[in-house]
Length: 159
Image (cartoon, rainbow, N blue to C red):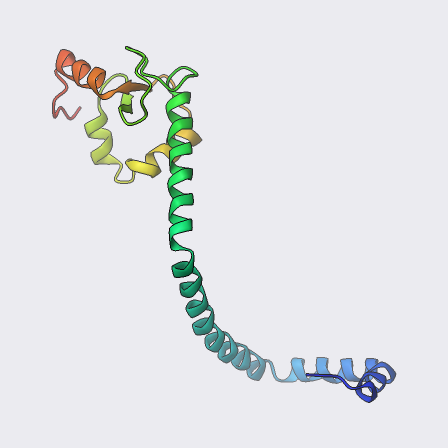
């Protein structure tokens, strides 16, 4: 609503009276006000959803690349934490991120995975960063992890 100079002057002269009338209306008609707010919310909710979808699709590639970068940095951080301060296998020293993974020191990863449905992928890395458990997990390359499983006969074992 555009206020003309007359409207501004009138409002300034009668400000307290206008405020009292508005407060009285709000106090005596709360149901009407709530219904109007609900209608307005529902009307604009659809518009906001459409706008959000348009923004998402317009920036989809950029957002996905940011998510990938964030996930890679999270993975590097966790592998470094559990690798003794460097992002490398604790047994052989392998440093390629594609070869590295988190290993349960005393075994039991299969049971942990079955018990905790969210303990995989990003959620697992979030948990590991949030709750440091250096005595339970370590960074190993896949070769060392398979060798360890074979030596300890951990294949499919659910403790």
